Length: 182
Image: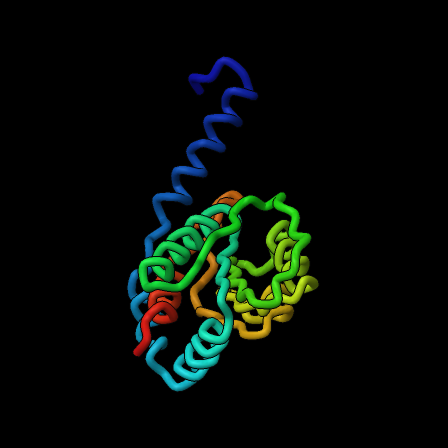
């Protein structure tokens, strides 16, 4: 069969299977566009309004997330800072919170809403008095349930070999809508 050993054959087979699975994956931009359009409905308008009021009633805004969600959080902090709101990001999953956060809103970003490091950060912030807004693709996740306001977005979770490739476009769109005063 052209292989030096059965082990070499198994490796080649696994690599071919992975290529085959990946080549069948098609990015569904229609799903993302449909979800973006849904942001204009009454449900989201109410959620966004409540979140804007909460953000407006506090002086400090901190975004947090792990991995790609942490990068989106950094973007969110930059957008709010540009709009004149004090905003920062915690994207170190091992950071310890041990100070009063009574005048702080945490915007926690997570596709699954189950990332243990993020849940620890959010729980700690909540213990020290912060209000929590979550942006997640899983409205029944631990993160959504521990939040004061949860803004879910509905996209199919897209994982390959435990790597999350779910689009973050909806999280960015929600952040941008929250940053605007309209």
